[in-house]
Image (cartoon, rainbow over all chains, first blue to last red; front, side):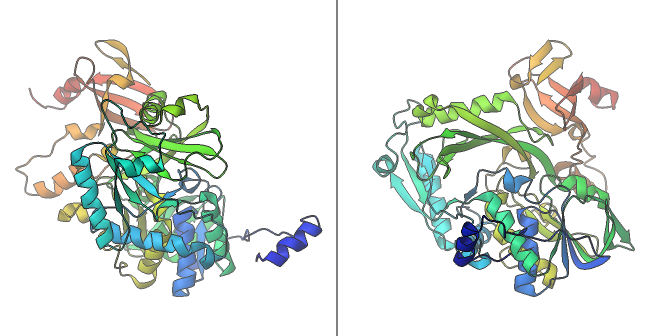
Length: 416
Length: 95
């Protein structure tokens, strides 16, 4: 399916009867050059860049349910490049640059909106940390501005500036950050990959790997065996469950993270703001709902739903920052399952099994990473060498003592 | 979630903090020849099952005891609660 202005007009005049499915629904072939497990944002992006950047089109994306039904459809849609450490920031900066050109690249409206992200600071120490982070961002080609309290007040006068315990002292503004229509990212990548010949096979669950003499020969699925030269796992949230079938234990725990949306309001919040004294962040969707979230529920979970104590905690944070939130009715809440890694950073790496590759451990930062994750994973699959901005995302980094621990929390996944 | 504390009875899970997999009780022998490898696995690798999971909870807002809670990670159902010290002693620790 190709789109054009002419096609839209023609369809409008003929009752929209000419639209066809955006991607095919093929039966799996006997074998492929690359089989990607997981039809989420990262898996579809990987297939897209394998085809586009490396000319590898004999590729299948295998998805247990329907594409885009996991975390790419359950996040709070924020994109940003505001990391501190050298192992991370160049990667996320590449991702943000890819976001900036994404819609033109795959000719699909993903509603990329660079509306700016403001991280508030409430103490002098936090301001110092924000300045340091901002400098690290600028050194890696990103953008950052340190605002004083008047600068913040000019942008968002309705915040609670005089909270007795956590007065707002300023903020770190990242203007190129923003939000994206998350489902459209999965659909755009799926369409782009499908047009280049990638088979997207939905409702097909991987039940095991065929591994002989240390080499992965393919995957067993609910639609039979599918052979592959290379098998690429890309199932963040369920990484441990899938890689267990290949005999691997991962430095990952699965945790549930909740998110919330309010009833639709008139435009009130034109960027993204994060509370620096509690875990709360908020933006307003194009439909008008306030989209916000906070902490993990803190315990291991595969449930895709959380519990009330964290709902209360998130709302308390919201009320401390935006008292007007008290007059807004909540519409929906939901949970997504996160691969929480031991240092809070992801993995894009080969495994000890020849021909088996692993991408996961995205914690709650997977959505913004989607383009660069696909880009770098495709690079690894095509060339067998890590992309230069993803060289630190190795599975053996704990053994080598080379953690990428943005928060300095240690091996306690629920604190990252 | 309600955690049925062996001594205090049913308590709200909000009173607790969560550490993680109860295998953290089984600290490796630091004198073993492969201690570095064992500590890497102990500290960084997890089974992370979908289903029954034995895990350590700390009753921070209560009697400050450590508990081993067996909980289903798919349904959040709590199946069993034991005092961690009893579990550790049964495994030969701190006699």
